[in-house]
Length: 133
Image (tube, rainbow, N blue to C red; front, side):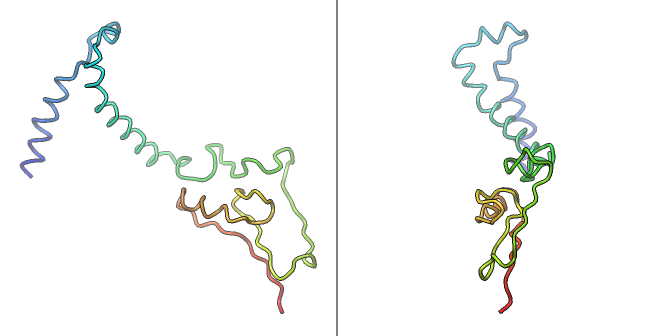
């Protein structure tokens, strides 16, 4: 615990106080290459913390849908509502229909939900219609 205490109370403040941060806007243009290199690690830490915060607190970042709430990003966008009528007699033994809007073979599922589920932690899958024997 003493190591953490020393890190927080002494090491980090000493490191930050020695960074070449200018007092004025024009001072940024006078920094040397070595000064800019010294600013890379803290900038990377701040950017990483910002990104993690964005993922934690921005619901749109965790969903497969866009920030507008739309899940359908590309399928027949010119139509007011996407509706497909499929005659059940035309289905062989069974057919899987997409519910994630990621398929390239609309309205049939092509397994695109697998990657979507990995990226978002979602659990969406297809609707499967199967004929009784």
